[in-house]
Amino acid sequence: MSERGSKKSLLFYLVLIVLIITLLPSSWKHSSRMTFIRLFSPVMSFVNDKTVKVRDTFSALFHIGSVKKENKDLRNQVESLKSDLVYLEELKLENKRLRDLLELKETFGEYDLVTANVIGRDATNWNKSIIIDKGEIHGVESKDPVVSYGGVVGIVFTSGRKESKIMLLNDNNSRVGVIVQRTRDLGVVEGQSTDVLILKYIRKTADIKPGDILITSGTGQIYPKGVKVGEIIKVFEEKFRLYKFAEVKPDVNFGKLEEVFVITRRDSEDENQQEDAQAQIQEEE
Image 1 (cartoon, helix red, strand yellow):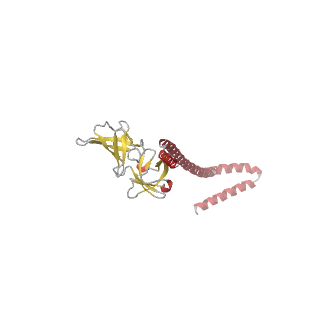
Image 2 (tube, one colour):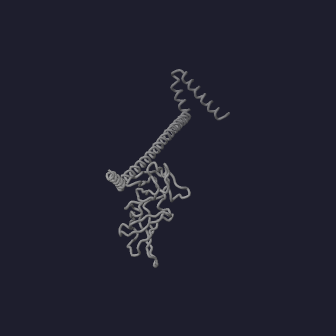
Image 3 (cartoon, helix red, strand yellow):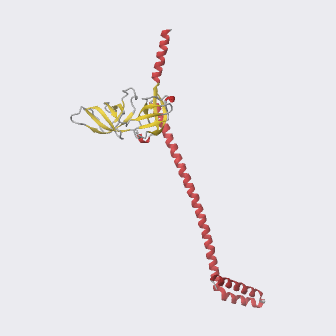
């Protein structure tokens, strides 16, 4: 007989004995009940233990299911909080950019700035040019200077109707006249297709050193005067050369540009043109 059949038989006999005791006369019931309890107490204890274990097992399984659901809910809450943190961080960065933009507009108060987003890079010239989402219909023209919060970015190389290509300052065809802010020495910064710019044509007796700040000189009729270009990181002096030269760390991270500002025209120049036009009209009258 199988183990399952034995258990069923045992249960049947137990039920039968209980029924028999129930049907006995009252005078016999007490003694028979006590005899039954003594005989089958080990079995009853065994059954009771198994019942408790089964109950505990189901209770544990239910608890595990509850814990799993709670863990899932907590994970969902954590993911939601992470998304909120990312969103808040973007708001924080956007707020900083807006504050920087206001400061930048104050710095170039006499100029018109066109805010532009970087929408691409030239695949053949990845780190030396960018494409922005502003063009001729926005007042952007070729050779307009481009700046960012950090300083000089480059110039408009070609201008389309709605988009423009910017040649970055680190391109080896780029150059800008600069002043050493501390000593007021004049020089020229050129790109060399790397993350480091080169400062040239500094007089040999000039007292320049690492840490000196370079700003635009305003010569060349492209960049306004006083825009930060970078910082000298190493000075070179060769015996038979007429000038010193130095390596410069640009103030702009050209690889991480997201927004730039195109300087399109000077308000004072427009006012002067208007005044000249009015003067000419008065003379004709």
